[in-house]
Length: 325
Length: 272
Image 1 (cartoon, helix red, strand yellow):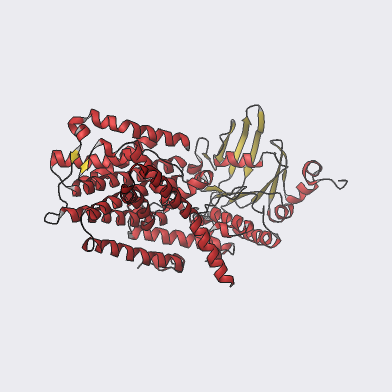
Image 2 (image 1 turned 120 degrees about the horizontal axis):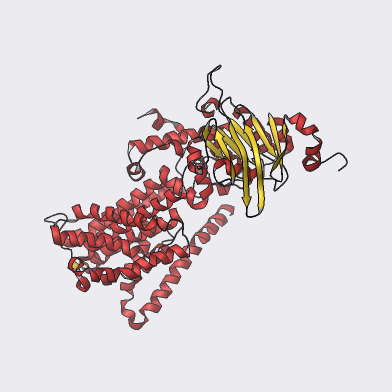
């Protein structure tokens, strides 16, 4: 170990609450890893989609947390990843192992390509700009039918690990992606770049004055966020075994944002899972409600948002009362 | 950690080239028809603490903003030593060691105190994107080195115990000291402090006064905008007085104190 790593300043104590949270997350991941041995069939499929959607939720939350901006067009960048996987499999016969890095790279590049001309707009104007991407996407896909399969879409059937059951792969690959993205984002929070982006978000002039240009931060955060969205699209294509324009409508982007709001823009694995589950499992659980599904979904959304808002305050109040008792 | 570790990086050997000064010639700034700065000629020398005083609206912070690149002057030139700074962005000037603190506290509430101070060092580090996302040794070394630098700056101001706290949990005066720690952490060559004592209580101001005196170094250009005249008079080697965007007086504290124009427009005459 180097002297720098051994210095006492480098090792400030980790708060006990954070240690507990890490332990709980490890237990959660272990539980999820063991789940396919306890449940089967459609639940395994639905959970695989949940994990992929959780990654998409993280992509929006990254933009909110580090950029202070909202996107209602991240379905576009997820589609970039998803179609990269499908087209590369169709045309080149390669598996996710090859197409995923390409899809993520294309997501980053397209995010930067979008961010540069829009670098000086923010708030509702940026959100509406991203919405334009989501609105244009289905038509773009349909007009490139020779590549994208048009309305019918494309199948994704190439296994990542030959010999292993595809249903298990469609569960474990998105789970692994979710875990790795959450770990990478945890690492990013501690990095110089991550801290600089947080400073730019809250005090751009101060960040500028200490050597971090705000334009760099805007472009970089879009690149990261869109790269994560493309990764989500890659694993979503793999988990669902098909890609088609109906999977990447404006509603897809809106639901990614809803998932991010439900997770309180959290960048941890449990928070992202809550968002992903809300996009995937809640509609499935409400499927028996018939025509009332949208109403029930709205009520559930309201309940989760209110719980996310009030539960921390409630628990803090209980802690305070417990402390004074 | 000793104070020497946060003194300016390059110490000029005695008898060689003098340390560079920050100079402005004919610096002018206007917003529409309002002339905020009217062709100022200023020289801030290394090794000195210069106080910049004047009534509200005199143009002190506007001059700071021109010096740091936040504002583009409508006239004049600014040099650090012989190097022109005109056209350089604030970030580029920061990379040349020209840093500042802000009139209102500009700390990030999502970063701990130590992490906020680490941002004062960020311009000196280059670990790439791979280190940002993966637990690579280079990234860990970078964070550890930045943390050491931040702790040194915090220790200088007696703030080491606040390192793990978030700014929102600290009193306003302490937050301001943290901001000064961030400014000094990166071994600046030019340090511009905009009302550093605003919001500090008497004890904190006393501690700040001691810290600023200790920070003065042969290669450091330090300029302080401040309304606390006791602080200004006690730490500054020279004082420049602004009013309506022009220089009213410039000189040693005693001379400024006796200057009738200064007494009239800023300090107040005995008759007041």
